[in-house]
Image (cartoon, rainbow, N blue to C red; front, side, top):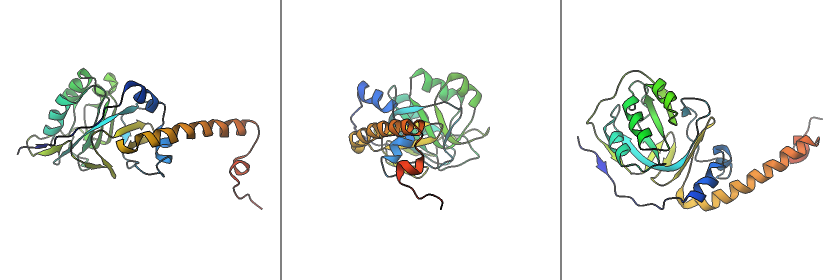
Length: 217
């Protein structure tokens, strides 16, 4: 079955913008979006310390089919992040070691998959930033079809190509591109406030005092 590739255009972030986003933890970005845009807790990095910061390229696949993902890898620009709706299927991998080799060769910014991957030892050695919901040795099929660069719902979050994907040990947050400037400004201000809170604690001020929280009577 053939798969569909949508024609999308989005504004690429410049180097200064990407550098600014790299300083924003996913948790802070979510705080600045009213605690929304957080993927389900099952989406985690395959190794501690991996981070993602880049613009999304989206793909939806039929259960256990890696074909559309392979096609997207070949047209994704350096630094972009593949975001894959694989339906959360846990018992058939849609990504493996050969795909990792090409993704690294093309300098992709990472991948987020609501589904399974395999050959994780190879991925860990390569340092490729893979975030997924499960790991299993069973390999993928080909030819069932899918959809590239459409709007997807991955682990409970809507994602469009061009949106900003942030990932670390906590998980993954997606910032809609049309909200990026406002969220970035709010996140930078939030980090300054956090520095003030930490400074206050080190001066002996308690959290209930700082935030006027109820105390035990």
